[in-house]
Amino acid sequence: MSIGLLMLVAAVQALPAPDAVRWEPLLAGGGTSAEIDPATIVREGELALYTVLLRLPAEAAQSGVTMMVMRQAMNCRTRQIGIRAGAGYDEGGRLVMSRETAPADVVYEAYPQDADSERMRRRVCGPAEG
Image (cartoon, rainbow, N blue to C red; front, side, top):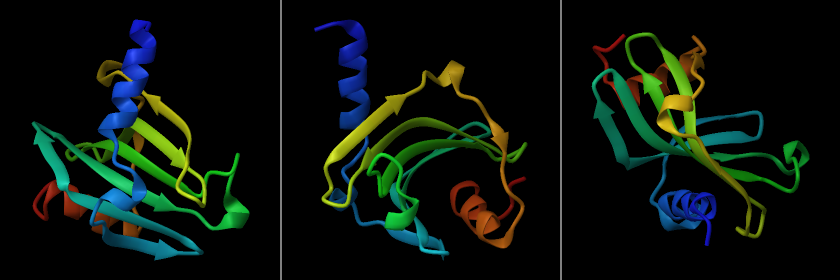
């Protein structure tokens, strides 16, 4: 087995299946919901790492993916977010795709400034951060 394949398998194994976690609902609207696994929230300096589950309406699904489990990193000071790993599942809970990015290669983007996004930021960074 190649190193790349081993890393891919490790990334998939590191992300829980959608039904394997007690998810905490955070955001909902327009048929899409976001839930967080509170047991995965970890701070590494300015970064907050956590795992989220996005549920998409069937009409928004691409390649059959209706659920995404993602390991995200948020810079609590700069309010930027990046995705370290992701796995997509179909309606039956079958794995459709997965991807992992090395921490040094994560691309961070500005985090939205709306009320729902602020609730998520406060949940992972704490109320006094940023």
